[in-house]
Image 1: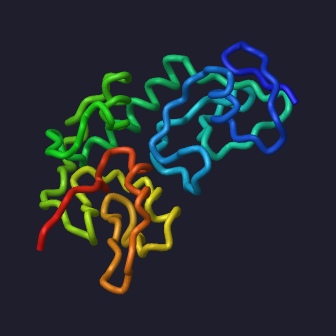
Image 2: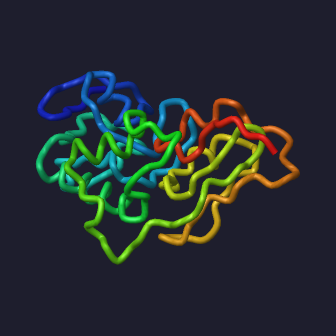
Length: 201
């Protein structure tokens, strides 16, 4: 099969996700809730592209390629939509990250800078104010950095779940019945809301 992305014709495989087909050709499409090989649900809307045939904006992380599909991922219209999506995420995210967060490793800060997203555009929302929570072992969780992407929820059996909906949705942490947490789960968190740090009782 063949599709066209940004006026470039490329070969794609049946069942392939649009974001993967683009990245394979060196076309970078940003994403916060998607990592190759992991379960996910579209939530961040940062990976939106335009289907030029229908005029619709579609999430590239969950859209399967179709033969002769024509996609735009670089127009001003697409970039503006991504900027708005980032500003919504930033509206209830802590403005000044605290240790051990490394801004250079934070995808949210990276994309916010790239798309010139404003931290306070939606001023009626405010960041949650709460200290980091110790989960178990060396695992900690900082709710002020969480963007509710769901990667920790969908990719472990360790007790991470969601509660509520919309702007009130929060990640529920594992309870005392959970004996261990997968050592690598913090590595898929796009904002270092879930992190490792030595802890003493």
